[in-house]
Image 1 (cartoon, one colour):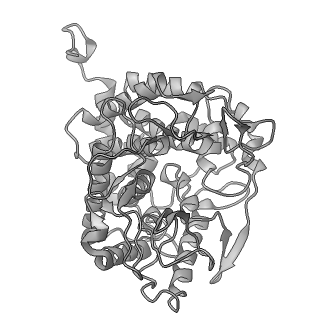
Image 2 (image 1 turned 60 degrees about the horizontal axis):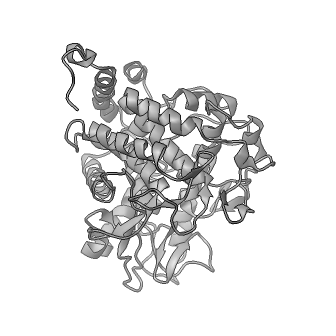
Image 3 (image 1 turned 60 degrees about the vertical axis):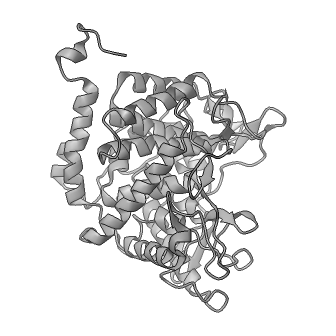
Length: 452
């Protein structure tokens, strides 16, 4: 809609433009400072230019997925798509849509979309989710029809997938600083009934269905849900009690190769919360979650390298297990003798890029070299492949593309972390959970001044 002559934005820069200009001005400094995280101690002197170019290409192809596989009218992102591109009949994933909302911020900051398009895409998504997408007390269904927003596949209302969507929504709100975006995010966030999802217990339920009520499983031991609890603690309406943060078990603990860490299962459990929440240099009364993800990543790499008697192509440069497609269906791969069959998953090392840059970059380069054009395609890497048998997934999966994109950008610039951690709800949650309020060691005073 054209602006009226008396509209205030005609006469002076809008708050959105000023805020976006601040982020973009800082972006050059972010790129210069660069996140430094290496192998064992999470400190390096930055990315070599060849690695930066490689990650930029991975990101560009990931953004292409979200552009091509998000419905323009609804802003909902398909759960998966053919690796070669083209239309597909899969429903939308609310988690993939949350990653898309963050993708628009990255694409705008990198000038990969025309001016204004990223904001328009975010508004389309938020407006449709606020007004049309099916929900129960604010909690979104795991999968919905990409054109109508109705529940798909008789799936559950999912607490974790709602949290992943909300993380993307808050990222968009903080980045665009736009009145309509802010109002829509408030409508979506404020309607969530956090205490209802506890179902009378001290922890959150996995989900709920109209047919059977609450699912029997709870988020009560370490997994990918840390962001879910923190968003609940910081919620402006009907928040979780602070005690909920301490109610889940920090375990089980495992030791491999001299590294002891909380094991959550597939590697994505150590990654998803970290895509938005910046745990570097912070710990609560229980653990250093950043260090835990470093150890989990490097322990998996060492475990995979020790399996060469069974899988000769695996090595310290070719490894990666997490939930993905397999030759016989979807599998939650993890470092376990009874599960693996030689399949490797590119988003496993990609999602751990900030935790172990050198090792994860080496794995991604090796995957591209070994897999060739069958594995490296229009949207980046195929979801998974088996270098022992030659099998390659014909698809890519939205959440796997999403974690790859966000963690690549966080390694390169820390942009998503910096945007998201500005949200007052996030700051309140970190305080209530008992995290130390300190900045990561690498972040200089000049960068902090520019970003505030």
